[in-house]
Image (cartoon, rainbow, N blue to C red; front, side):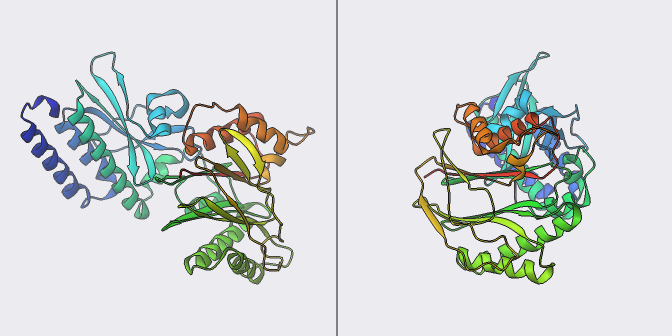
Length: 400
């Protein structure tokens, strides 16, 4: 029976704590493929049925059920047209009545600021005790998925719905979570084409009050581009972790690429540092299109700055640009493939069309993950679902 029907509040609380304790004791000891069975057994003690663990596919189109003992399959859920998709995009619980009776509850799988997917369960009736326990079960499930993902291919296979190139395998192994939301900052990125991306990548880290961001585009295509991107991101992380300034980070990356590759090989890059206390944003542009400043759902300008040579060409120590953001400001970084892509024989899309699409998006307040995804998918539809180059964007918001 649902916890809310137990009657005695003290018993309800002790029941919940015991339930969660048993969940933890069992789940951490089990191999990855049995995590679903523990989740299913736990929600069954709440009176829940038809549990699903839904993970986002790499193309950010569907939520795909994890296959496992006790879990319900039922096929993938479209993110744009389902209750599970609304839960995933908003990070809020979504409930819907079930025609056969009961309530289908969708709870975000949140691990800190990262969301892995959605936990869906059907209950005969739902009260606040049920909601509280489901939220905590979902949080523990997200932690398990995150911790066990480092030594299994199970979750990767669930998310992969198309064949993936070796170059894309390399790039996805480099990436941080596609989205992170914290009280002061939020970040979301999109890589296209998801299953064949080669030279594009991004990285970020929240170190104390400083948010570090980087976006790169390695020249060429295929595995050679992915290899160069790996070196560039590795050099960026190394420099960032020894706490050097932005201009010095550029020099670290430049030296690493020039020492490993031929003189005509290069990587364009955008590096940023945001003080999450004050909104002070610093950046270095090494051959990328200028980022866009979005305020109140409108593009209010480009963050123009002195542009240094791409990484690998031996440029001088670059000038660091600076601006102070207002609360709610968003910064959009993107690679040239986003604006240079065009259908055969037609004019390139260009930055003006990108700005127009940004300002046509639904003005209803939404998180950066939903906005970044909508923008990327809008651009993909505009070019007929095909692309001849990597097209990557990174959206960051200073929440104040």
